[in-house]
Image 1 (cartoon, helix red, strand yellow):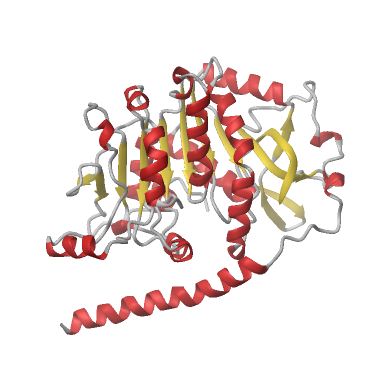
Image 2 (cartoon, helix red, strand yellow):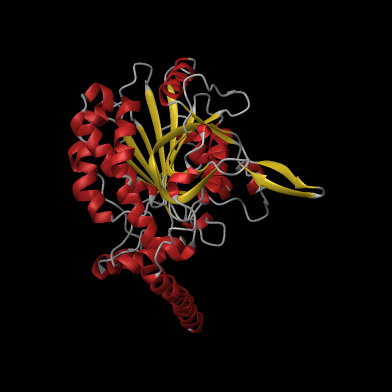
Length: 411
């Protein structure tokens, strides 16, 4: 009883600490405006290199990754950068993995080399690389509190971790990259939905596209899912079904909304028969989603809190973990294919927030890489009382895995 009491007090203290930390985030994030800046936004994009032509070709060996962005670029400086403001249009380009650049003797800065591309040339190059990789393409959409640098670093890591052979594209929307700007990020994410769904539709309808591995992190899932639903409704089934392998990492999405409105269309009978499936990575130690849960009032898809206390009590009585997940779509139960899989990484969560286990925790990294490469049931998964929910086994107590090396994390 004494141990139980101490644990309860510990849990209360932990929740109170995070509630206190949340207050300035909520207050400042809600009332702090976005500053326009001292330079007209039109001046940032006036230079020719912000508006390339078909003659401005990019060395793909030097910049192997592709990007699409609605961020405002800064073409006034020596090296092009992408700001946190909304851009005047969607732009296309290529980038390289992070590099150390010497700005002055003895001092280096880690940066992402990038260049813009003519849109028609960009699509031609993507198609060519897809054709050489049996039509496979990886598309990554970042979440809240990201800069172009951080999302580019993660795109590079994902491609190396999975040893993905096709082209890798990151879609970069104007996240503010700041802790106290969550409401602004939500606003910009919704603002960008039209841009993203138009891009996704075009990618799905390319003749060379055979399989799109669509990965989203955190708030990015709220951009991806309605856009995917839109594409499903507006293009032929044979086209949109190429978006077959959907991976939602720590999705900041309302669980009930996912169950009621989104999963029914995206995981419809015919989509699942055409090999469509969704894999969700969730953790009850995800502090970022815990804050989002408190902020929105209802459970998030990536944070398996039990909203119904009677369900929680029943799980406890059955000696099961008090965790609740999105339900498996009943209308696809008769199909001999997996439609929805949820991986609970609570026991092996790593990092200060537990929000990026797929890039930081060795067991999750291994499972994630296998899913990217099309595996349906990677080794290391442990079954639960729910057929569509699995946990990942933690390393043995005496083992000390090099998580960063296994996850191919360079920094």
